[in-house]
Length: 93
Image (cartoon, rainbow, N blue to C red):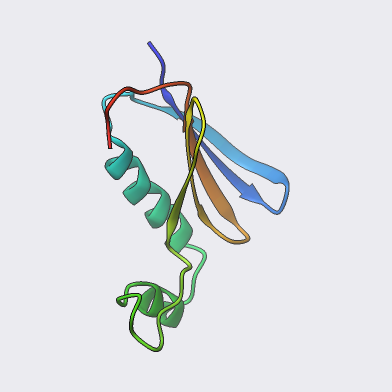
């Protein structure tokens, strides 16, 4: 059975990788990536990233991006950034 592969990068350098249970949904994995990315932000950056997009001080630091393709790839963060990938999942968001 496939598992999520969670990886953390500092620039292009791989800092860590860990396999994570495939029972977790994309939404749960996205929240995990946001938590990891938040560790590298200041308090003000976390606050601004938690605002609504329409608010003046909003910053996209904790937005999770999803790549299109045959496998699921999520990413969050700037430098440092975190990714999660799974070869293929059907109908899970």
